Length: 422
Image (cartoon, rainbow, N blue to C red):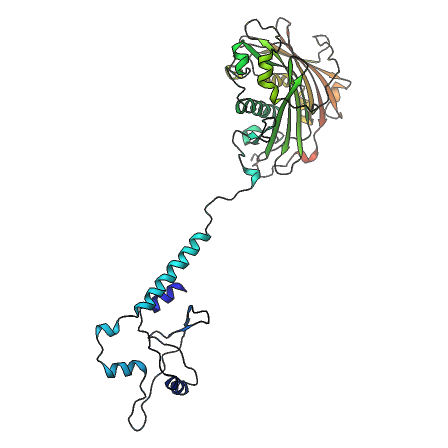
């Protein structure tokens, strides 16, 4: 509309005629008297508000006929032409109308520009979806991080593996410590601990899995720390589906302080307590502590034994020790295949006895409790006992796992994945 007005401004504009002439002309043109008509048949008239309106008229300009007496009913343009010869100056547009059209164009363009919103709009649920996380509370006590489940993190069941979930727990914990300024000299020391050659080591881990996410899901991991006795620390995690809010997994762990050189347990002194004490929250653990004592497991009581497990270079952390998540993979090495095919891990309790270094050779032992070994695929819930030990017999990790039958809906939940052909 604005562009049309600008173009119309370059056509000659009729001068207003007297009222008497307007009435006479109106009669001659069928009773309608347009405000002005240009050579293209565009009628322009002023609206009540004073803004110029432009309408397209598909009819040809009305013709003025001569009368029988030979006298011509002249229009305004013809009157002007008869009074003065047509010159270049007379053919120039009305500059006031041209200026008004240009002003209208700029005002309309400015209005459209101001209406544009250049800020990207996105839901709060996608803020920092794949970043390093951030504090939910200003005091730094609750930390949150989101993870997208990648295609290479799912297994034969088309769900994320337990190792993937445990890696997410570890990553969130480290980013929490880093964001709070409590990470120094490696992954297991605060600045004050680093001065005293102390590190944190995990002593116990409990995990309960309600449902495993699948490819493309975004999981939300929340974590916090609390005091455990006088010299220990507890760290808890809760994992939700970021889209539905459903609980996926809970985990609780206990940590003790160790001298990095002597490998002996150490007390938490006042400097370290003052450094991390402000981040402790006074809430109960997300999982009630498993007070069951893990029975002794040896070659005679074990139903399945896997030997010759050695850590690869990629299994070591920055402290040149085997990553804690690798222990879970080694535990599953001795789990019978019928359980892995027909059941999924529902919960586990791990007690860490000592570290494993790069030159160690490990054995994995598994015992099935209270079930018929010959009918594992048809069993309901299954409980297993596990042991990781060095070849010399030194215990590394003791554990207990509970398995539930895989639901029918757990398969085929990713129909978009291509199947093998041929």
